[in-house]
Length: 154
Image (cartoon, rainbow, N blue to C red; front, side, top):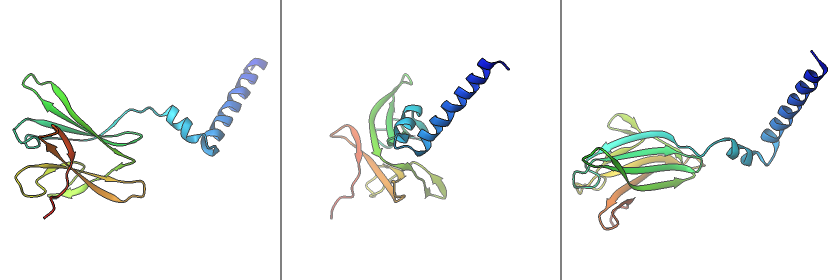
């Protein structure tokens, strides 16, 4: 090999060595990781229901993982087949979870939590300390959006 090829190989080895040291041992690691890893969403789960808005409108709920946490996107389906975004809910610093629903491990479930005949959505997650949460959401006709569900106080 020629002298220029050797210098080029040594230069590439040096850059790779310095780069891996910065990524592995430096406080700049988070910045480098966020620069290298895109903010794209990773699809986790999808559920379809005609019972979430209470008028028979087909709703598709899509659960994504992003660098910032879990995102739930609620879409309504129109007669022409087009899906329109109804609302988007972000659960910051969350990791995906699952739970047993009727013998199946699920990441999203449509259930009637309070027995009022109106369905709610359950989205299980874990926080950074691996504490589990069931995040319930229901459709608010006043807000025309999906909002966190709380049991009514007796």
